[in-house]
Amino acid sequence: MKKVSCVMGMVKKGMNETCYRFFSTLANPTRLAALENLMNKPMNVTQLAETLGQEQSMISHNLRPLVRCRFVHVERKGRERLYSINHETIDPLFKVIENHAVNYCPTGGKCLERMK
Amino acid sequence: MKKVSCVMGMVKKGMNETCYRFFSTLANPTRLAALENLMNKPMNVTQLAETLGQEQSMISHNLRPLVRCRFVHVERKGRERLYSINHETIDPLFKVIENHAVNYCPTGGKCLERMK
DNA sequence: TCTTCATATGAAGAAAGTTTCATGTGTGAT
DNA sequence: ATCACACATGAAACTTTCTTCATATGAAGA
Image (cartoon, rainbow over all chains, first blue to last red; front, side):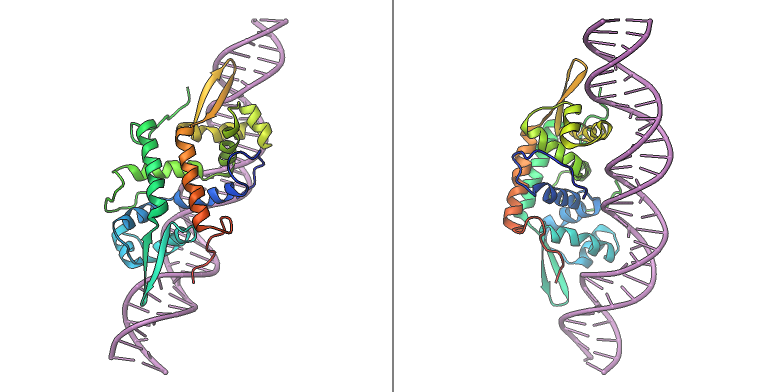
């Protein structure tokens, strides 16, 4: 992440780097789909890969940043690993996003295509 | 955005594309710094460029997705444009993120570097 | 109209992130 | 100890996104 100088506002120092990591972790269709599926129930890598129709190694690679940011928890069960959503963060997060979409993007994420 | 198949969970249909656009708009240090500075007060492009120590055209380019997603509002004032934060969304959004950081990333965004 | 100021835009090169493929690691079962 | 299963990891190829530079647009003033 390239540093950009700034006057500190309400956000604590160091917060921008954290935000950058968080948002870039979420800015990926595979990881969003994984999160969405984990909402239903905890799953292991193989199950997720099957559900999403993706290679196991791809799922593994993509789960890593989600775990690193603690958006999902992981628990070992014998030789598999059970991944589950961190509802404490993810639920309110998606609530904010959904609320924003309802208020500002009535056409479904299309928003303003051009500035006038 | 490449589509990834998924079983629909709590998130409405079409929500993943919206989320992807939102999060990728936020996943950029320049745009995060711009948001942070706009928290203090509305600014025009030139002021933002000066504050952030970046080229005008870069700021312009980066403001565009923020406006498109409606994270910032823009208002014409003669020949300049005044950009301001959409506090209704941004405030609760950063509150969620900050709360998560406090609970799960005590060392300041470092989180888990490796899985064990 | 001509000039200047403020900002937007297009395109090309640079950088960052993603996917794939091959392989490594660890656990449980025989 | 050996095998198979579940998963992680590394590196290269590929794709997407960013930044820069040059230029265009549009409003205000002389």
